[in-house]
Length: 333
Ligand code: NAD
Image 1: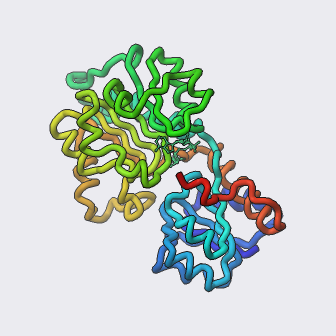
Image 2: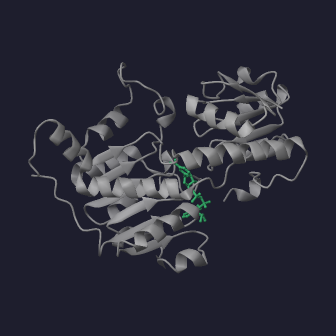
Image 3: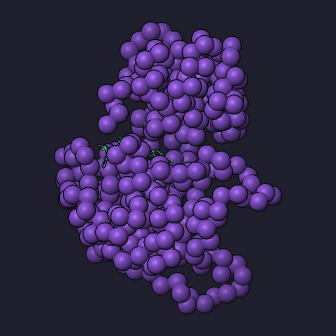
């Protein structure tokens, strides 16, 4: 198949080409993100392959349909960026990579927790500047604290497993509770999780129900000085509301690997430019905030697994087999 691959960096190309082996499929790699301005690049291909910040609205999908595209292989787990109902209605199949390494993301969420708590980002800069004072770098023992996980799927469960070694109390909230998490932590309702957790870590998908799940109302229900971690999707968090929470001291620490407006900024080197997003710039300026550029997934294991599963999905579509990683409308909660 001839596949237009959007939002590609050199590392995506390397792992996809390696998984492709004896050049079974013909790839055209585009650095551009897919949106209504770039969709024309898909012309002349059989399928497209996309990532987290490619925006597949009904309009873009209609365009793809007119180009004869029948298949979209997502290189990510989340599918909030695709109008799945519309894709289904016009007969375009969509697959995703449901699991490539929950460890990569959970380990990164834990990295943010530990770095924020012990102020590693500030210590690193101080020491490089010859400042060996530890004034202001005081943290707290994670041991004995309460950590609330919103979403106890694959990543949330790995997070709970890792946390079990820290001697913390793990609370969980999920619309579909599962037995595996039940063995690691305690399910509570969302308000109880917000009220009792020292750290709230988000591991649910972005859906209409979870949009801005962290907003001024939920922030007000949290413990004063709470740490909030988001490695899931940017729009789970209302950024202006967390800025107010940080300014008032209600939020004590914030770790964001994802950001609602990330599509314009993340994955690009903008170090020579004036960033126009004032909300992002304000967030970055807080000493108790760590923002990273949607890199939680970014391990060698994950990239290899993403490439392999994506190509398995392409092969299944090509040979008319059942698409075991299809994204269906039944999966939209
Ligand atoms: P998963 O499907 O295994 O688990 C998601 C869990 O969230 C499920 O148990 C589901 O029941 C639950 N959920 C759904 N709606 C909910 C709601 N309204 N409230 C509470 N829980 C709800 O997915 P996963 O593999 O654990 O991934 C979780 C999310 O992490 C993905 O949706 C994706 O957005 C994000 N992610 C981020 C990165 C990154 O690099 N930062 C990488 C991979 C995945």
